[in-house]
Amino acid sequence: MKNKIESMRNTNRVFDTPFIVREKVTEMDEDGIEHERWRTKYKLFADGANLYGREYEAARQTTNDKTVKFIVKHGAEIDETMTILFEGKIYDIENIDNIRYKNELVEIRATRKRVRK
Image 1 (cartoon, helix red, strand yellow):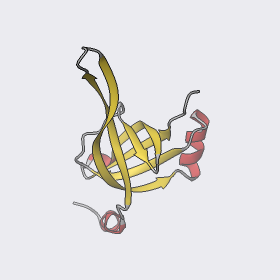
Image 2 (tube, helix red, strand yellow; image 1 turned 90 degrees about the vertical axis):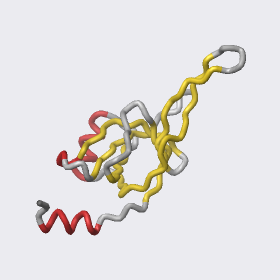
Image 3 (cartoon, helix red, strand yellow; image 1 turned 60 degrees about the horizontal axis):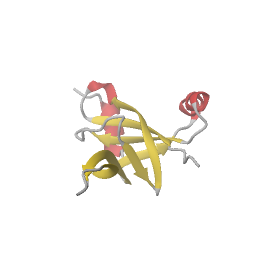
Image 4 (tube, rainbow, N blue to C red; image 1 turned 60 degrees about the vertical axis):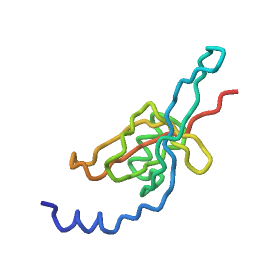
């Protein structure tokens, strides 16, 4: 049973940040040549935020790239091989955490993908 504080926290959570989860698929053209492309798998809404405080400092120790956190309702099958399209920028999924193993909320941490020149 949920305690009162946890219930209030989830009641006040607003899933108002839209983003797209994409997966890589391989397709074969008419000449038999395989091509890889990114396909939209899910269009979701999250309680999204930039990292701050201790989370921000810990992320900065491993990378200088921008890291964001999305909290979504449990249900979508998402893994670390997928990418996130958010505000026109591509993010690599670094970590997926089933919060407190209750199968209610999932936290997705993603890092901005660097464009190689």
